[in-house]
Image 1 (cartoon, helix red, strand yellow):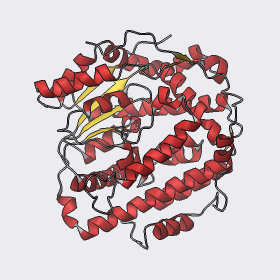
Image 2: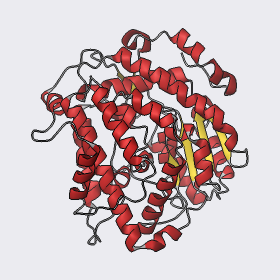
Image 3: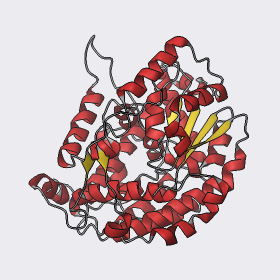
Length: 423
């Protein structure tokens, strides 16, 4: 069983990428809510977070997060394409993750035993965006022996009160409302990267709490931030992520985590330092196919936060960024030996998903019981590829990328990992 579908998926063509149709909802998103500032200083962000957290004021040890915040704010000011609403959305996100940090520090201060919780042999999934990592983490999360991270839980990791029997967690309700409105504005997102509040999500949100998450780059064009990020050690930020995982485990076990993010691909050494007993699975896909998919997804969503959208500039930025990510991956790959890591080629993964499942379970020393195997195979039946439609990409025509020249830039990666080049 390969988990593939028998019926051809509907084709989705986004023909207004360069000059998007601006609906009233998108226009409102571009403008943003009245009465909110679209520019803030570090002190103003922290003051707003303390107010929103009910007066908590201890952000914990600062190993550079304030400096990273200042760099991020300056980089957003330099991003001339961001609309007022786009900047407000980013600032609100920054305030929210600082509220989370305040609540984490407060909880750990009151319950110091949290820091004694063992994070046992976590399973990390790394890989380029659009290389099957989301599918893999949601698939493996069917195994309840592994602790996984829902989108809503990643956004608000601290539970503030006990729930009544049968009560829906208000954090889940808030996330569902947010992402429901997002997908209502952008109906094709479900076919590219659905944001269901209950789905299993990247642990990027946990790195946000130390202001060291690369996902800012998905929402803005911030070369200053990228330069600062690569110039500094990210190990302390993964150590902070471990603290957040301990908090989440204290709320609800088990303590063996399943985690995934493309950002892990460029932080292999840091993860090995903080989680030395982990298992690392890295998916590899033709970076040109990744670029086609990623620029289409980001270019489509840019209409709610940028004016003009400028697809060629977006493609140039991500051509450079993917090269940086892949070079970092190759430079750090030897941090993980074959007894704790595996490289999964996308075309082989898609051709035989069951084989990959068994390979990962052997590597992680997890018993693949008949019950778990049935749950995992059931997921493949329920979630065929292109379930919500097949998006048609045009990297050269819409984004102005010379694919042949771009492939030459990635020759170093093709030589290291035998990914299949996708036409």
